[in-house]
Every structure is written in structure tokens, then in C-alpha cells.
Length: 182
Image (tube, rainbow, N blue to C red; front, side, top):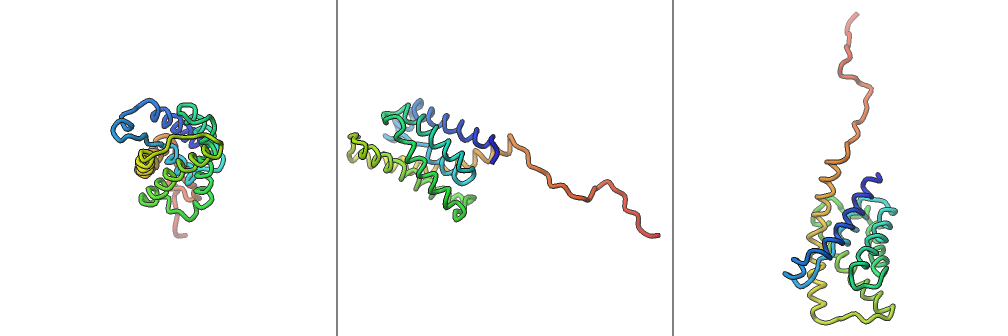
């Protein structure tokens, strides 16, 4: 995996966390903010190496916690666990299919808040829970399912725009002259 891909993924995570905290249009319309870190983790787990998955979990989790009401570092472990599970089974996933991307994005976006909640309750915190939390969980899950294929499209476009494809070398030169006969 090239370092350029890791840098793009980390920059996208920084922008996703900034977008979630700075722009309240989605939060005001739907009553919940869509978290894009699980969608980025799905992309990183399916296309990058374990180092990139770990960096995304650590940096993205700390950035997310620093701008939210979570205690610092509580989102790192759930994000890493989601990424690790997808990374381990990535050979079994049809990563180029939009349907598979949506299903994996839905699962990751649904599991991430649950793991965060379990970790918060285990650490002795008392988060606010109610029927509104169920609506927020549904919106976050559906938003993550819709955002995951978009992440794949955006990163595919970035790869085509900023990287070059290696041309395979052959022993045949098209400008050589072939003499036949005696």
C-alpha cells in the first residue's frame, strides 16, 4: 500500500470529523448527525493495510472524541475493532459491489455506536438514553450505509486523478523492423 493512500484516508477522516462538528444541517433536519468514520474505516479495511486501519482508528477516534462529549479515547477501541473484523474477512467480501459496500457500511455504522455505548457503560459513565437514541441510531446506520459507496467512488476518483498506473513492459518494441525471408 502506498503512503499516499494512507495520507488521503487520514485527511478524509480529519475532514469528516470537522464536517460532523461544524455543519449542523443534517443534525437539524434529521435530529441526528451521521458519523462518516465507520464508512472510512470500511474503505480502509477493504483497500489498505493494517497500519492504515490502526492509524485511522487512533487518529480518527481521538479527533472525534476531542470534538464530541465523549471522554477522550473512548472511540478508538470500537473503531479499531470494527476495522479489524472487516480487515480479517476482507478476502470474503465483494468489495467492488455497491450492495456489499452498503451492507458492510450499515453494519459498521450500526455496531460502532453500540460498542461506544457498551464501553461508556463499562467505564462507569451514564450517557443519556431514551427512545430518541433509537432514532439517532437508525439515522446513523442508514447514513453510514449510504455514505460508504460514496467514499469508494470519491477515493477511486482521487486515485485516478493523483496516481499513475504502471505500464507493463514487454520485450516487443512496436518500432522494430522485422525482416522475413533469406
